[in-house]
Length: 101
Image 1: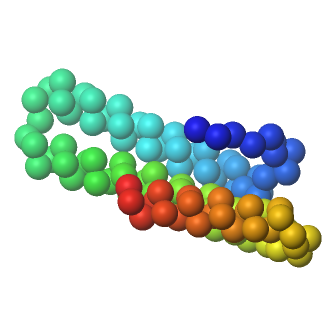
Image 2 (image 1 turned 90 degrees about the vertical axis):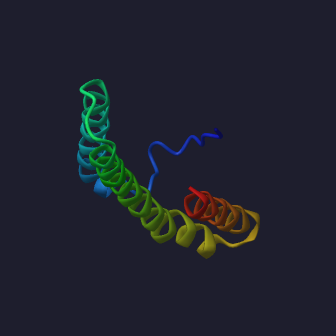
Image 3 (image 1 turned 135 degrees about the horizontal axis):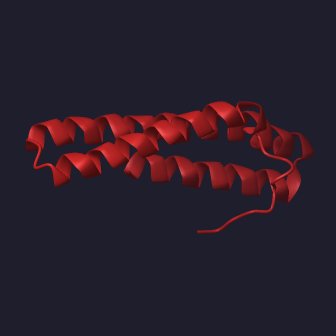
């Protein structure tokens, strides 16, 4: 996974606490899934919880994507040139990954 060094300059910084809260909730849901399997819970009940955990992560992904478009891509578009093209390609690739998942 490619990582970028933009720690001081990320679009989600204003939503960081909310995003962390959502991720912790999703983490709790996944741990609950593990317990359900360990406890031999009915398959459909587990699948229902898998759906809820997936939805929680999708919500985080969409928030991050929205923040990226509103901040990083918009800023790069104002600068123009290669940086703008790169940010649009990154956003397109991220959207494609989300749609495929």
